[in-house]
Image 1 (tube, one colour):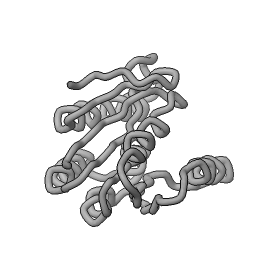
Image 2: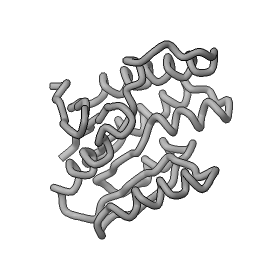
Image 3: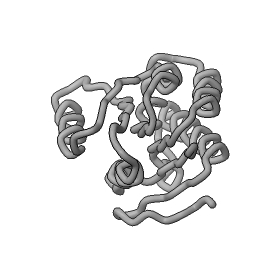
Image 4: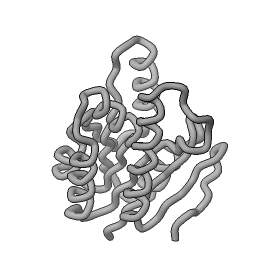
Length: 167
């Protein structure tokens, strides 16, 4: 079965748990592609907590910037967590966001099996005070729109409750 699901939500909304629940109805092993980088102790603790809550059967691959390449070789089913950190990493590296998004779309179109993408919905808050914040918010909105257009299913998670957006 080929399917692409995009899970959107705010910070601490339950996006990752929902994505894990979608995949774990399929038989293991499952592949978790992590985009976070631990630059400090607090982020190390967050990453450790994410890993600790997952049951046996998960293989973790790290892809802070090279997501399309890692995705193309990952064994299905796959959870990508998260596009927001991937975009942040690309922006901080001054990468070409359009080209990176094109490469991600190509990798997703070429895949077989189930893929679940996790991303933050950042457009419902206040306008960021800095130019970088506004560029990030705008780029995240465009990335989410492109992934939603490609996805078979889109859900918005609010306070741990998934709401079907597409179809």
